[in-house]
Image (cartoon, rainbow, N blue to C red; front, side):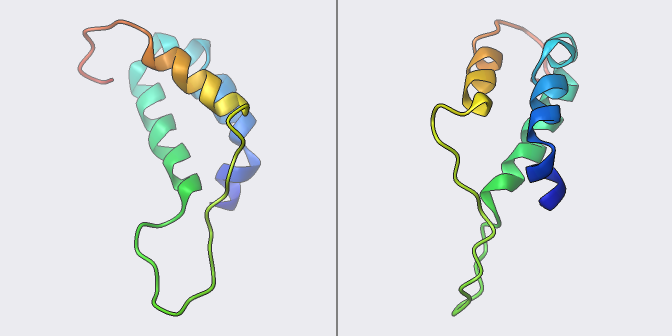
Length: 78
């Protein structure tokens, strides 16, 4: 997950940028990778370790996701 946190800008620029808009498979797997920022669904009972990160709603990630969602396509990849 550290790598994903460190490379958010690169993921947004490539995976949800012009390359992602041209290749919905790339955009799909970029979104799957970005989901790991939210941490794991399963929590260990009694564990204080919280690996998720919180981003403000003004963060670039939400703007890029909104742009991708608004693209009309019939692609089965997306």
